[in-house]
Length: 109
Length: 109
Image 1: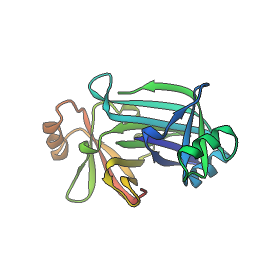
Image 2: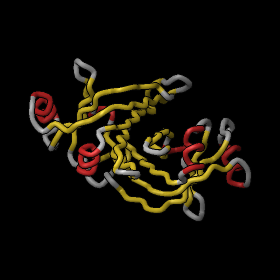
Image 3: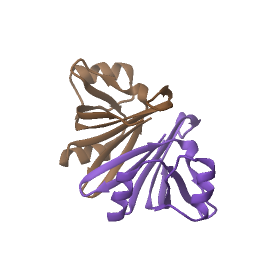
């Protein structure tokens, strides 16, 4: 599961999505389908920093079966263009694509 | 998977744990085993607010198979007492128990 955290002043807002929904571009950006995520989009207009964790119980991690990654980056919402159209073909329910530019990524588990 | 968010000034810190590790007390507090979580503990000393999401791909949600909950509350770390000892018997690797008092909980998926 994926948790995506943005900030509105002092208040974190968390939305979740599924690991399988994340696509990685050739220049290492993450593309995440957005069906709702209105508060996330509003937060990003004020502060484009984003924090993600990605975890899987089924994949072998550092210590046992189960792994996790923590990512810091910046985000923007795409509502047109090639990336949006490609994602819209896969997920007809999306209204936008959340694009994340990775600043740092660490394996936590 | 569970994501647990605390704040250090303007910076959210996210740690993850597994759904099956969460125990619920008779007075509806969440008990979560803590093996590390040092930054979470430090953040809570300054600001005891905590935000959690709990998701499962396997459980039927509102729209499809897959469900999620979002919880806001306050937290403290327990390193002794009945709750700690009970959890320590189940999870011998823990150094503390993260106790969450729920302020609000909503089903998001």
